[in-house]
Length: 479
Image 1 (tube, one colour):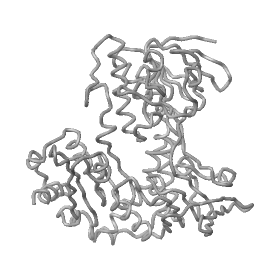
Image 2 (image 1 turned 90 degrees about the vertical axis):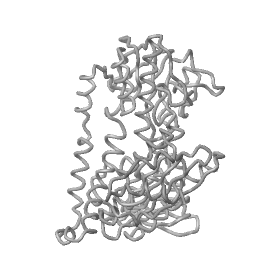
Image 3 (image 1 turned 120 degrees about the horizontal axis):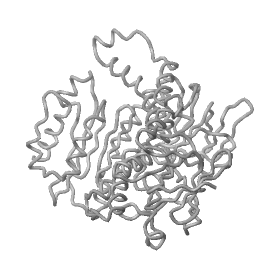
Image 4 (image 1 turned 135 degrees about the vertical axis):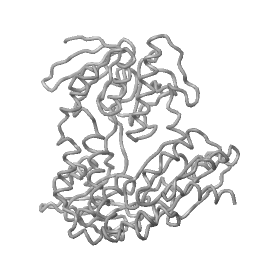
């Protein structure tokens, strides 16, 4: 078995693993990444990029139809085959040649195969041909293997071969009838996408639609889905599933109701990809989420560092925040702290320090690309109260902003900011409405920067833009 040594070995070449490796190489260290599938990971081929491509064409068409002049110019309906072709292009037709070329240009070594920890600082790579290569890390091994869709233990579900987010994102045909188990982000976005493409969609949302968001967000998305012809069944839960000889999926619900569909998407959560990466060799449980300290080093059940701190976990696998942009944020912190420790430099692990991921707990931005878009960052009102903060909630009708009225006729939207009254700073913001995603970063900066409400008065929004909602929120707060 060949043996090669690098400063850092990263298991997983998705966007998180790529960023860790790039960061340490820029810091003067050597790095290798190990990947068993496609370089670029879930986000590039089965999540962020292809799913947003599935959604974007219908969003643009809907916007045009809401504007006189543009409305009259639209003479046809959405062409599903063209949408799928554009999606294929954004998934690079499921070829990772471009990303492999980037790794090479960045000076990062790539090993294809299953990466498994075999000893302290040692990763064994088992290639498709069964050949093994041993990689030794001088300073750190980083686990960036991500997560997979969770398929619950519902009678007959696995045997019915349901779609997960992967199959939905890469679908080559639009099913006539699509049933979705779940009401979260993936379920809501894919219900929107496939309804746009012509499917008759049924959503079984046991816990509601977007249950982790502000209540008004889920309510608006639910209403919009229903207006688009989607059957949204709140509180519904499947107890058994079967697929007939003709391919039809049959679902039986807890209330005895029945649902039939041509395909079934399960979108209820994620599970870590740690089953076969050698965790048992270092005293950890295979298949478990990895717990990390504030600089993202892996710790055991007692909170003690694994080994002498050589093992890190970033991205979905540490369960802090299951979002690509937060994983990349963690990756930058980890890459920099590994370089610092390797060079004997000070570690900046204070709150908002360079080598920690403070935003994971205080300022996580997220956009749900439904109709309407839901953009949020920081804490919801309920989460802020649960955290013991003394808060004030300020709401404003986005449709009352001049820029929104110009944006599309009949604009409907809502904005909420959550203010920590003791510190006089914003700790949460949620926006619902067409194209609100582009408003989100202003809220993120305000929360991360802990900008005082009095100072925000001097951040003057340009007129007439939808950003004027910030002035209106501040005015409402000052009353």
